[in-house]
Length: 420
Image (cartoon, rainbow, N blue to C red; front, side, top):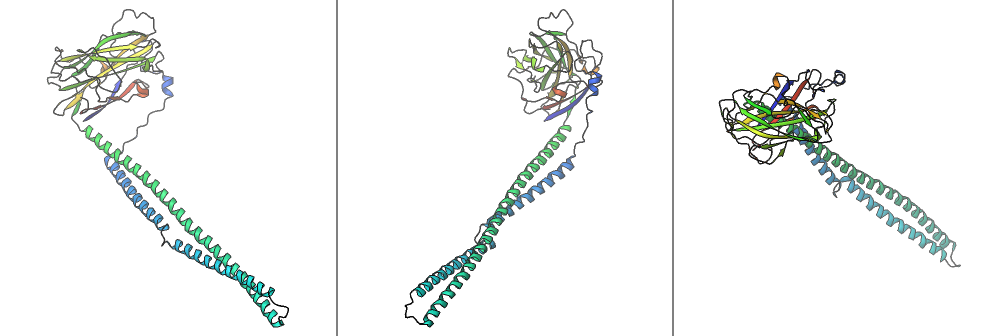
């Protein structure tokens, strides 16, 4: 089971920090292209595409099979051009034999002329000369015949070889076409499967639950680079029903004072269960381990630790928190919005001074919903490492950047069944 939720949260423009995190100047915003929304293809359209891709693939397989058979035919002894080439070679061999015999006849005729005695009659001399002349003519004709036969051999062999080369090329083209058709078919099948899966997700009984709250306490309003601070994330089930499994989630983002350059690699957020001393890194993609169960009206605290590298410049940060629940009966849901807590980052060596702790951002959607008063902890947070279930935030530049008036679009994708 998966949950996909798209949360649109307005970030107030008037914030007391010197450089508003998640904001851009009007001039900068004006340079940004307007996002274009593309309509997703329907299931029916994807099914047609998958069917078409399957048909193309089937045709490609048949074409490759035909090309293979065609190539095999060209190298068989019964292939017409092969038969013709063999016949030409045989004729050339016979012409060569005839030419050899004719040449030998010339040699013999010359020898006969040379062997005539002085007493030979004119008739004998004439007969020998005639024999030589006829032998030479026959040899010349045999030479012409042999040359013609040799030419036919070259022509026939070239035709046979050209046919084989063409068949090899045709098979190569067919194989490439089959490979591409298979890739297209697999892509179409995958798109259809994902669309059906997503359609199934949208029909799941996963609902926003305002009384499941995630509240940060103890996070200072200013954190000095080169230091670390501890605070808590309290997850409260304000409903009247037990939640079989609650998965807390946290996300941290920071920028320099301009608000345009993120310094996320210099900001590190970790978590630990209340009963464990082991710290796990928040990777902005995965849930923390499950609270199982969280009874009605109960809360559980997750220990959090924020570390800012000493090299971090002065800037601004925000920690987002949220939570989802999954029940054994298949029902599920979660906090309607991410709760965002802003803090200033002071340069290393700076004294933070006395100030209030980090507060939720000023928009109503980001204000923690307290619901009913929390009871003592009735849930337990596992301390075996971060969950494998993913909660991916689709954020501009990997963070919650405000555009124009400050709209933040955050997509969270949850998976259950693999989050234990």
